[in-house]
Image (tube, rainbow, N blue to C red; front, side):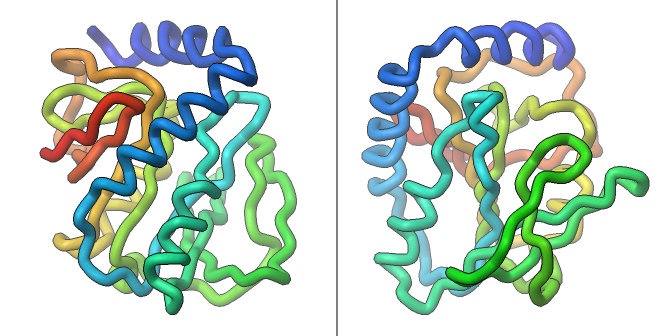
Amino acid sequence: MLKKVLRKKYRAERMALTAAQQAKLDDLLLIQFQQLSLPPLYRILSFVPIEAKKEINSFLFTDYLKFRHPELQVCYPKTNVFQITMQAIATDDDTEFDANEYDIPEPVSGPIIEPKQLDAVLVPLLIFDKQGNRVGYGKGFYDRFLQSCRADCIKIGLCYFEPVPRIEDASGIDVPLNYCITPQTCYAF
């Protein structure tokens, strides 16, 4: 299927989830995530879930990673919607967040961390395929950013749904995931 079709289908499926279903799926995702054998992590980029879009509760995963790696620095994206770029901003417990033009919460300020300094990125998505390609919201922020990360930076997708066989219009610009976690299993690519 094409990204446009998949985006519409899986956005609708996610919006149809009840709060109870979503909470259960988040718990199952975390159980699968805890099965990953990850190297020591020092800096990661995560994302703030957009509740109105019923995104996965990424805080469950960052809290778990901080427990496993007490020295972990968690960064969040700050976008430039005009240049279609984003930066990783280091955060702490006092970091303030504000909604950007797309109503996505972002850090107001903080140190910028270069993409090459990240050990892992938690990547938001709607659906993925069996080759590790993903469908996001279609702006390309993450693909552009991931192209600047180190080759050994671990790209982890989180998805409520099982993969489709193939995203027909995945291209060389798309950066495949290393792992994608679903409530049922962990896919490695």
